[in-house]
Amino acid sequence: MGSRKSKVGWYLLFTAPLLIIFTIVVIVPFLIGIYYAFFDWDGIAANPMEFVGLENFSTLFADDRFMQSMWLTVLFTVLSVVSVNVVGLAFALLVTSKLRTANLARTMLFMPYLIGGLILGYIWQFVFLDVFTLVGEVTGLESIFFNWLNNETFALFALVFVFTWQMAGYVMIVYIAGIQGIPGEVVEAAKIDGASNWQRLTRVTLPLLMPAFTISLFLTLSYGFKIYDVNLSLTGGGPANATELFAMNIYNEIFGYGNYGYGQAKAIMFFIIIAAITLTQVYITKKREVEM
Image (cartoon, rainbow, N blue to C red; front, side, top):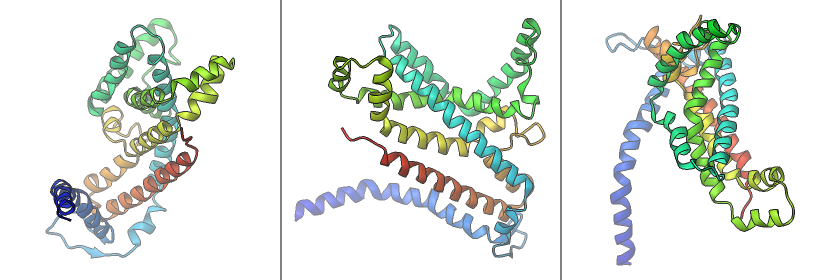
């Protein structure tokens, strides 16, 4: 009995501070944000708050700019999830092969993730503005190599490209862990049975990688929906709001236009959408995982 009480004491000693910090930093601001969503307020303490009930939430669906931002965010996230995971898996398969420079390749491919999103955005802004334009003039391929950031369609693709460049190395690490966790005897048995490289990949490796897919899809989905730093530094939401994604739209609503209550309503809706999509994804992919 004494030993059990001692274990509980140690457990509380290490977990209680974290729970208190989490409550203060996450739970309390979240609940305050829900409270503000029911008021018309500009965020200035000296000005009065007017209770408007659910009006802020009902206004959302008639807000064309918000709906456009939602559509752009969904499109960006779908494109990013596909590109990041395809590239990340390809990198993982490459560096777990018999490549001589595998360790160097891992380091180089992971490095973009270590650079902050703001810095990445400014670096690639220079590439799209100057390098792309120069390459187009030199090669004559000006229909491909031009300043993507000034084009309403290509600016979103530029965001997807930079996000993929940043996240593919990070997702690669998850897939590497998954590949290294596949029992060698299973792969050897497939070889003895005469399975080709493609058959081993599609019928052995990929099904056994489903736990890694669950994690990687969850990370890329949540990061894709929440992206703000690259959006800010690369396009700033332009041109003509063509790349103003969810997080930037909420920020502009609150701090740009001073609609604190309405912006909080957007943030709550944002949270509900992300939670619903990511939990659904985890539920579906967990059911397809293969136990070894």
